Length: 447
Image (tube, rainbow, N blue to C red; front, side, top):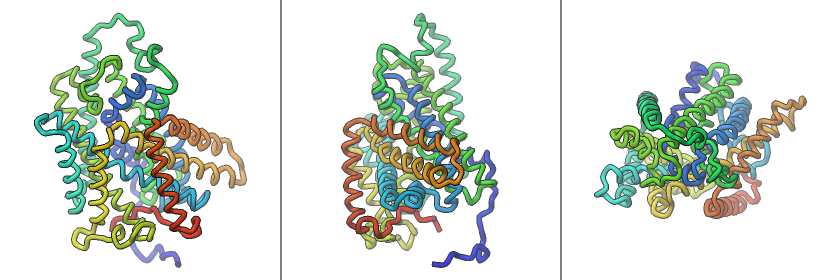
């Protein structure tokens, strides 16, 4: 097929500055990213949440460099699947793509679980199972109608979240300084507590903490609209990871000082809300509502993203085209897929805890991150005429750190994730005749 003539139609304008890209990345990841998972992190790491967040940041910094570099090579088709398929092998690309499917499918599921848990805290007379049904149905109905949030709404939400973070910071400082402590290690215990520390707990916690950064790779999709994309996409990806990492570390550090890991939470899924409320009672409602809004927006977008990914697979005959490749003519959305993802999210919410759902999501995400690091290593070091150490160490370190985090996921997450990958790979082998025929995992652009 011949390439389209670039002058035959309008092109995207390169208007996004480095600051615009960083702001976009922070909005996508959300400045309150670690609050929803704080309880699961604290439980898995026996309190070492700050250290886990910072280690995860290092892993994501190296991976972010790889994403930024691969975006240079594939500026208009940025995805882990494309990078790995083109640079390594279509079969490896398929495995990466199938792991991405897992991410897309699980995101609306964990958002349904969290929203239901927090809504139950607000209205305990309404059982959690009823809230799960409510949110799953609302997500599905809104997405079927094609309703989505605008960039202005997302920016306003980010501003509101930032205001809440500032209020939490002020009340946290006042609470901590207003309650003297005789323990000389009080301020360092969140980083290292010799009574509960173990490398297994730390790396297990870090494998969950990766969720804090998921979404930073979305910056690479703006390559065609960015000023000086060869420089700014990479810089914005790395700086976004730094900003989110430092902000997240401060948020969980304050929470750990307010509510030590030795004291159990009334509800682990909404732990951060209880910690914030300890500093100022009205924050229970303020923070709880803020996180419901954040998770609601994330779940709504994630469900449509999963539906579009399934549509891309159906359209390319990777899945039955008559069902997954169909588009509702009225609202122009893949209605069958939206309902399918909603039903899966609802069903899974009754069998998975929020913490287990995070681990399963990260199972797929870490595989995709390893794939991107491997692709960057192959393209910019193995195939390069000049072998530079700056093209060797970031992808190699990123790959092995992600591998270590993946290896330290819980045993149940590894079992379920491995079953998912086995089924997908077996299907891919059958469908492509041992990957001799291509399969697409691309999310179609919105027209």
